[in-house]
Structures are given as structure tokens and as C-alpha cells.
Length: 208
Image (cartoon, rainbow, N blue to C red; front, side, top):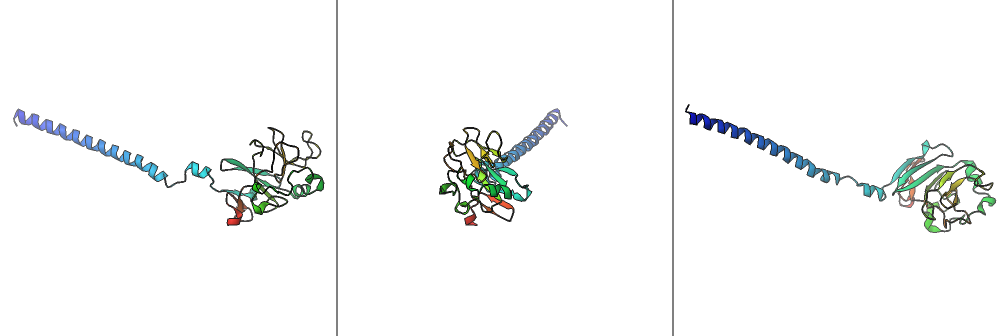
């Protein structure tokens, strides 16, 4: 083989290697681009965080609650309390002495609860309170105070919620006391029972 033929062969072999390398690189880049472009498309099938925060229902298994225990879940970016009330709690909330301390004992302000929770315990089932844990004064989160007649809340305290920001008080049905800054009862969210103990917050009972 002539020297010129040898040189020509070496150049062709080199070009072929470069061509294969370029093709492989282009293939990898193209595949990566396809995957990257496909991610937003695939994610579009899933509910966004904003959509979930906007009102996706939240389920609560109340069977795991002990008597007198409360848990907090998030719905629409707000805390929702689910309390399993004891018979003693329910009894204390019905006494004339307690009712006289409440601004709206009969839940007359209709906007604070769905129609099916406009009753003496502001709930579908007496045992479970489902309520948004935000004070109706300036939006603070009250503390859960189930203790009876503590020194800092007085002898008339039968258990409820105390707002540390400005001193508003609510009983264990979320009903506001008189002579406090909060103007209305705590808000009851829409909810319903999927079973005897499985509660779904965010779905109105009247629509199920």
C-alpha cells in the first residue's frame, strides 16, 4: 500500500470514530432532553401542591383517638382540630351556668358552621368536634386547654380553647365566650363520615 493510501485510510478511520462519538453524544443528549421535557408533562397528570392546598379533602381516622384526645390535620393551609369528647365534657357544656358565659350558645351566626352542625354541640356526632383552629379575632391559633378550673383560667373554666394573643376563650364546641375580643364562634369546616369513625374534612355532608 502506498504511503498516500495509508494516510487516507488512517484519516477515514479517525473520521469514523469521531462520527460514532458524535452520534452517541447526540443520542444521549436527545434522550436526556426528551426525559426532561417529559417530566413536566407527566407531572401535569398529578394534582399540584397548590391544588391540594386549595381544598383537597383530608381523611381522619377517629378510631385512633382516645377519649379526651385531640389531633390536628391541615386543610386548605389551616389547622383543623378533631377532638373526641368525653361524656363528662358534653355534660359540662350543657349546664345553664356555662351557657350564660357564651356569646352565641345556639350558633345563631349561620356562617360559622354548616347547617348539619348547627346544634348544641356543633357537630354531626356529639362525640367528635371538627373545627378550624383559628381564632376569629385576628387569626391566632388558640391552645387546647381541656383541664377544669386551672388557676390561670379561673373556677368557671370547664375546658376549651384559650387564645394567648388577646385572651379570647372558646368552649369544647368552639363557642366563644362573652367579653372577649373574638366576635364569633370558631368555624366548623365542611365534613362528613365515610364510616362510623372515618371522617373526611373538606366534603360537605349534605352533598354526600
